[in-house]
Image 1: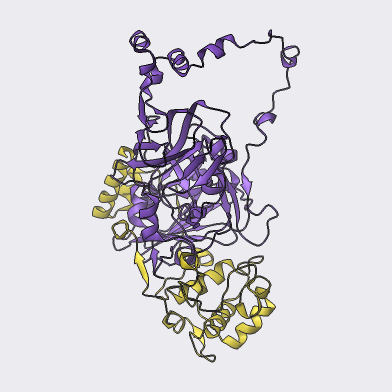
Image 2 (image 1 turned 135 degrees about the vertical axis):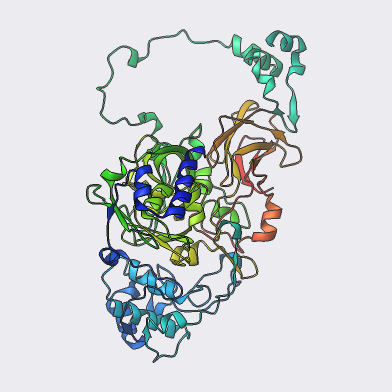
Length: 180
Length: 438
């Protein structure tokens, strides 16, 4: 790993002086400065505390309609009961089928924000990145309500979504804490 | 050396463990002594050989040289196996034929791939990498710019966190090394240390994680501890000397040596520096392995020390008693393979295999051991240690903690993740080879 040592030294140097000019002397510096505003269209990562959730809102009723209209039903089945792809609605026991038990949103996922993040970045599978933020909130509301995680009429938005309590939140063990 | 061994005669065959495992020193003097000791030397030299004739390919000029080489047509069976050849709406796995390869490098055309939504056709002239978030200055890099950076070259394996999942079956599934362990491969990767680019952007000292995201249609994203990013993470641009294969994430990928393949973000286009993990879909669900009590591990990350015998193995058969070389692969995400033991009697006795050097950390390591099969039932298995002190767990110990599936899963399924216990091959007196548990 000796190759990395000069870089570690450069890091210390950077931390100590924090000067872009100082860095340029050690590395090629061929990156083009860009503003966070210019990255916005790509910056779709949602953090568990709700950081970066966009404006907008949606309800379970709107989501139920979108679930059919956007074709989710084709892979995830009627009412999210499962099809060729994952079960979205249902809370089977995590020991029902031993260590191969089905992991669902309601029985396994630790954070509600993961649902928003994944739908927006990856769904619908054939036409990703086509849902509006309101539509993503509505689909989240539909799935949370169908799983009895929120009342049917609760509106999902940047404030309410991160507060949805996920039943399995506390059942994870960090495998290698020293690596974080 | 040879003379001394010759004088020792048959006793030169030093058996190091039960059922015919032979110390490699016994072979250093050459095959003459060995063949004689087996009593097969006579037949080797006195067999009635046909007079040699010129084969047809020696009687005329050969084919025109192609611009891109392909393996011989006689090697047509050496291909990857596909889980989803029609590209249906699900992940596509291509498993590497590790039992048909030797050495430590997986050829690029045979390197395993997993694509969650097909292979994007990325134009390197238009692809860019962005670094932003908790940095002093967000930066955008073109491929042209990145190609001018100082690069490092390292041999690293990449292994899917779900590799070897059929081993969680309560009964051994009769399947090849390719089916059981083929979501693992090893290559010579060339690229830029991630730390170089992070330093250029100027990371906020309060930051702890980095979110990596690909340019595939699912924008697959994982959270990576900055600790790993600054340790040995690389933005890989070359694979075994040539630009990365499309399925291995052309034009570039994140490479986190020793960490599960899914974290080595494919088609890398964005790194966002943050102060908490994003708990993306793959880290929240697939790569949080369920434990027998219903709890689950998270942030497993590591491919722990592992080994398996590739020859002989299921799918082959032994052609009668006599000499065979046992050969296999060992690797570890926590260091350099230090030792591999082999047993031919299902773990009752063990002998130390020869390990081909130089041994690189977090890389496939080839191990071999001479074996004289006496034609009786035998069980071959291997167990590896690395230089961090980590050892491959015995199956009973592994299952005691991690559990096993209640029913036999589909061999293409993923009942659980991160299996690194032993693999064993039962040799029957007929020469047939079965997958067994020990």
